[in-house]
Length: 324
Image (cartoon, rainbow, N blue to C red; front, side, top):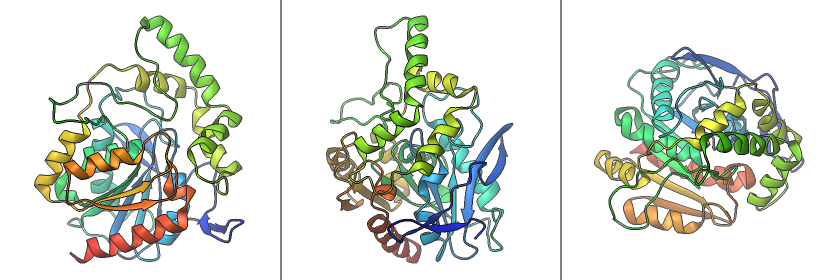
C-alpha cells in the first residue's frame, strides 16, 4: 500500500489526506490523478461523484486493499486531475478515460502492484456522477469490466419506456442553471454560483444536507473539495459542464446495452438521500432485474457517510462477483 493510513475519531481506518495528491497519469495530453493501494488480488476501480475526488473513497481504499488491488481515479475536470478545457457534455469522455486507465494503468500494475494481467477484468464502483461514468465505461469497454456497483448513481433516467432522452447531463451537486438564459447571462450567473459553491462554509453546508450524519464531515473532506475548485480553470470547467446542451445517453439505454454483456450490477443505495432517492433505484431494478440491491440508512454518499456498512456490503458482493 503506497498510501498512509490514519484512524478517525470513531476508530475507523482511512487514507491520510495529502494536499498535493498521490499519483499522476498522462491521458490524451492531460494530467490525471489517482490513488492506488494493495498488491494482491483482482482489481477494483472507484469513481467519485460530482465535485468530489479520489480522496472521497478514503474509507474504502484501506479496507478493500486487504483483498484487492484498489484504484481510485479522478475524472478529468475534478479532484487533482487537470481542469482541461474540453467538451464534457455526454459522459462519454469519462467513460473513455476509465477504459484507457484500466488498459494503461491497472493492467500495467499501477504504482504499487507487482501483480497484474492484461486479461484481468475490473469491477467498477461509482457514486453519483461517477456511477453514470461507470455505466458509460461498461458499455464502451465490456471486455474490461467484471461488474458494476452503483452508489446513488446519477445520469438522465426515464420514468417510462418512451423514446430515449436527449438532454444535457444533470448535475445535482451544485444544481443546474440552464434554461431561459442567454449565453452571456448564463456565464455570469454560473460564475457567481461557482464562486459561492466553492466556499468552505457552503461546501460544508451542502455536505450536511446530503449526509445522514456529520461524523465524517471534517476539514480534510472539505479541503479536498476546496483545493481543486481553486484551480484557475475550475470555473470554466464548471460552466462547460453545467451549460452544455449536447445530449447525453440515457441510463435506460446504457442499462439495456449492459444487459447484453450480462454484467453483475449492485445498487448500494443510501435511502436518506434528498437528491437521488430510492425511486431511482426502483426504476433501475425494473430496467435491470438481475441487479442486486442493498439499502442503507445513509445519504447521497453512503461510502463516506456510513463507511462501515458500505464496506461490509461491498466486500461481500465483490467476493461473490470474483468467484463467478
